[in-house]
Length: 136
Image 1: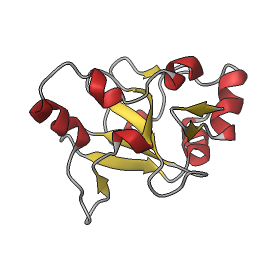
Image 2 (image 1 turned 180 degrees about the horizontal axis):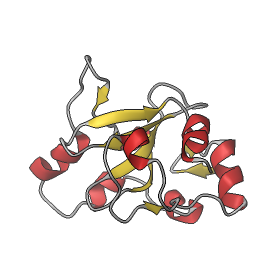
Image 3 (image 1 turned 90 degrees about the horizontal axis):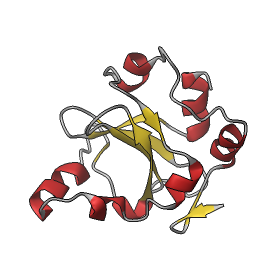
């Protein structure tokens, strides 16, 4: 299964098909993301498949969109995101998206999160690790 040419990892498909890809109540959000969740939403697979070029859906000017893309941060990678090489997974709340980042690996993308400082941070090296951390 693919979304905009990006392969959905088997572990993600498995938990989604089993009905476990949902925001856990009282989840370990602070431990995993470093920040609390305010109304977390985990996208359904069919929503992921429709989120192609998600950055284009941000209804603001290019300068505002650039805030969502971020800047590379070699000291604390990635710092930024490539919308064409990422797939949104959900939100922890307003302006708190998390996504698969395929830049490092098409087979094992990392999970990244846009933190409150508007910097993308890696929260899990793979979706498999992310699923285990959340207890899904």
